[in-house]
Image (cartoon, rainbow over all chains, first blue to last red; front, side, top):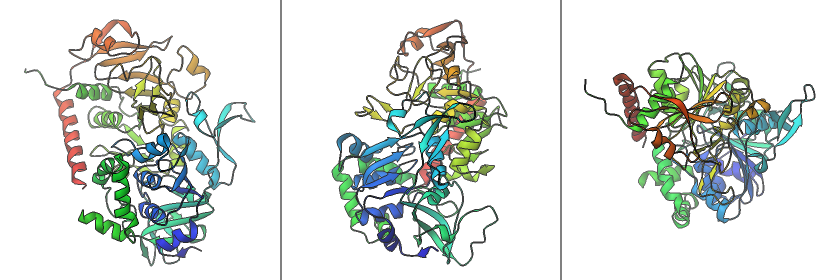
Length: 280
Length: 259
């Protein structure tokens, strides 16, 4: 059964230095509050996984949380490069970052394999690309037809973290809209944390809704606007303005560090962070 | 009748949109392809099924998305599925007729780079990387590519091959047994290139009004093959321009509003 905790308690209990950590959410429901709390609690040497590392992972990498990144598309959507990711990969600041680069289809089957407790996922992919030397992909022969297929090592995070619309008091989670690889990430992980907009008496979900039953989740924490500046379908829109501002904030090390100190290290929680940002 | 004023980018988007047959299922990349696909849907191809890799199927956005997962795409879709399903069942499952991609670099066999300019370890420009592009290029029935024409973009050798087009030309793509036929046209701000039926080398088959063949050759980083008879792309119509401009205006307004 999921424990209902504060986000501080959930990160303290379930995310450890050196863990393989997946924060999923495909542009929608990006778990920013949880990522900030990981920065605040100074987790180090994490092996981060995410199909679309965007501004959140730029923040975590620049703040020194990560030793490795596995991904398939890395950018600030609609804006440009991730400056902190580049600085870590190319200049080793604030520490060297190993990268394992994939295509989306490969990450998708690797998550599905992880959730299925299989050693690898298979696909017709990676052929004809220069990606192969930069990933863990291997090629195998189909035992039935002999066709050459790509095998990608299953993703099995120590801990997966997502944001969702709501949970009930027992810790059953409901999410909708663009749901990305969230379900697979949770089902593939040893431990899991879900932040939610609200905790309600009854979920009132129709059959076939994306539900994560309480017994597959380690902890549920309520954080209002926990996906900001990403969005939560049915609650608040994406702050395109923040994504654009991030380009300027992250371009140079000093400006970035000052921002992290002021907005994350020197705030108590995500509510304080948002309040301070609103004043700026 | 007074001549219509339009930009090279508008011509590119309109020419790309015209390539979309009504009723096609169309897997769309963000940026230029997304603009062209939506223009097609709003003009001659209203029954086109737009699919974005975020899992939104049959989406009818009123404004162009800034990111691949904008709420607008989910709200106006026939259905929204997860990432594993969109890639496994829909895209690699062979359900999609046409893929529409952009690129930072392209070579003469329509292989594309969206990963890095310069060496992988010491990039000059680090681009976002593959995303869904390799699977789109391999799996869709056909592929359209749209990008602006310049010697930096149209290169003899890619800095990184992200997605396979016609590989080394001839039957080299066929040998890899990709499910789809690969790129059928490259639409730029100067004209349209199509692969030679046998060698698969990109050949200039159409120039946009006011553009010369010499201009396109000069903007290409390899000795560009030119068709014996190069057509001129028909001018944008007043209604195509109106619909595109309205779409861009709605988009700018919507995104500026989200402070």
